[in-house]
Length: 160
Image (cartoon, rainbow, N blue to C red; front, side):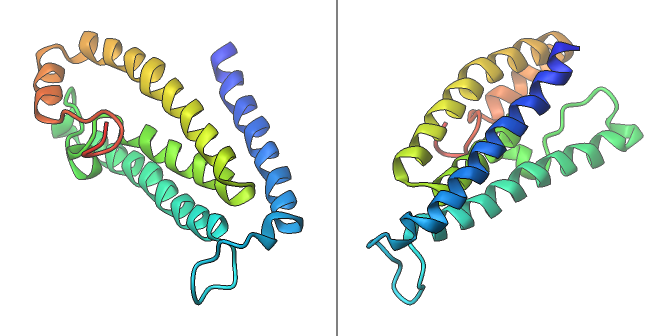
């Protein structure tokens, strides 16, 4: 019950902070001098917006691909290795880190965006991946070991 309530509570808290920060950005850091040529907005807002969209698509898209895969009877007891899952074992976590950090970047500044990457990257990259690795090892055994050998990246293809 605690886990079921703590995850949405955490999301509400972080999204509320993000909303406050984006309001602050709209009233103060909108005057940032570093701008992308041809766009009349500060670079953190533009880059944050694009990263938010990409991260949201990556997280949602990977979860959708896994659901479609798991709903097919012939895939019962198999690990999803199609779509985004060919590139990283926890690609959904990578998408989450990207959209959450990009949201914070757009809402505030580079330092807050990097702090969010550090926080979620550390939490999901270490704790979350370790917990899922243990679970997947117990549930899928040799199939999981083969998948890990074939897909070496945990969160982001070519990076980690």
